[in-house]
Length: 218
Image: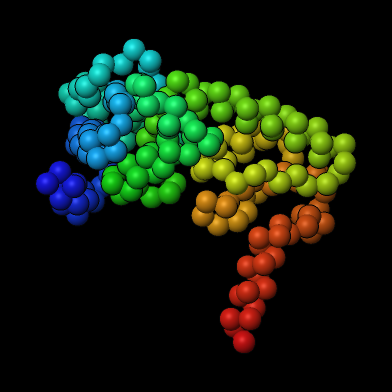
């Protein structure tokens, strides 16, 4: 019955996060179903946030708390944060947080968020994403040094949209051009050396897509 209610909510909710209290309830219902069906020993703490999860958040969401009933903010900072605790937390973080990212992605789908709006929600556990942000910063510094030394582009591994955005920001201070390439979960960031754009090699994924499209036009 809960799943059916969620499906009805998907149809009714056409402006995600305009009513954040309602969005919080949808997330809470989804997580309750997830924990019950998966027999997961997890507690979820849902709260309004301004880019950071508060580790001492209340166990239940307060839909009347400040910041949850207004319209979503125009920037890409998270509006609703979820912090997981419990004995099954390691399951969320296994394989580079694969399950954690998957749950966050499903929540974004339930709220009918567009891909560029996914950063409006933020799911974390045991500071995993904070540690990941530090890793991205270190990777950016290493890539900048390598590109400047070799004069060759550097391709990062595929990342989530949030991680790509953070990586672009970290790379921006170098003044070197960046671009995203690939599609869907295989989308990645490329850092280029200084010089004319025409001299930059086209990433393999883009070349493959261009060749495929040329055959389709014939």
